[in-house]
Image (cartoon, rainbow, N blue to C red; front, side, top):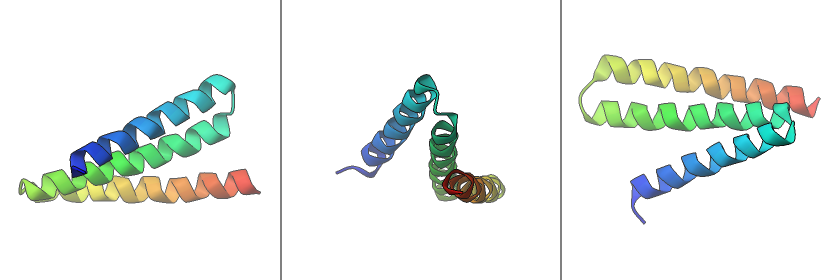
Length: 81
């Protein structure tokens, strides 16, 4: 399967999942899936920018993906506690 199709499906599934949890009123789960969505989108942008030779912008996107990955873990721990 094409890599871009898989990326698009992952983003669509996470978007729909976070929206469903938001509508259901489960804000903890909605925020958890939104942070995971941000990790994926920023890491995809990082790869794309790096391939295009935009090193500074790619470094920024990698930093943002890392920040959201840390926030994902923090939210997950808060939910489990």
